[in-house]
Length: 296
Image (tube, rainbow, N blue to C red; front, side, top):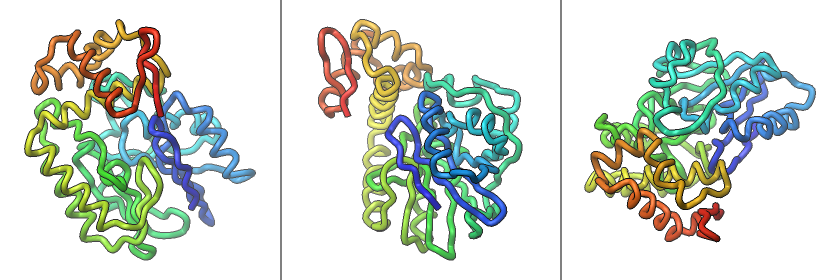
């Protein structure tokens, strides 16, 4: 197993080398697709990539699918509930339009259902349903070695935005149930969707449980976090944005518009001002010469 730890615009990529099959889990964002291909080629050398698995279909986890398929003719396997949406390329039902993000069109060749057994690196893994951040997300668990590929269900210090709650669908209880599921597994190493692999699972679960309680106590906090994350994502992609353009860019992202309408209730201009100030306060952006500039 070889873990490619990426930046926050792209998910981590996990490569497995097996006797009969080489596999990658998640492929990063489309802006980094060429970089993903070069990294994978470097790690694989003269070996072939046979299959791509996606833990879920947010654009930062599947944006390299097409370029890897085109280069290696790798088969693409995705969560069962997304199979027909992808092969019909129903952009409205997929997450890309709602989040204001992009993904090169690809075709799915196989589906993965909860409790399916997968052979990765000649070890048996089981796919487990992990709703919350995304209703159809999966995590992958290898009981023999105590390994968990947790996608965005558990990070070392939290988890991904609970997107379903923004437009009125349930997500908080589902997130808690997924954390309960993870807490029952015997895990010695977690490989998250973002950030470094970690071993102190108990501590990370404590942080995650504390955070879900904090968000559930006042759901507006989840909406605030989502707006900040989606603006930061745009900034990571573009590097800098004219301040005058921020309100319209945010308004044009359907999930931001919904989150604002039902939770924040800001005017469009003030929403842009507020979001910029939030990124500045977090040290995630700077304002220079009337431009919002990315800060790592």
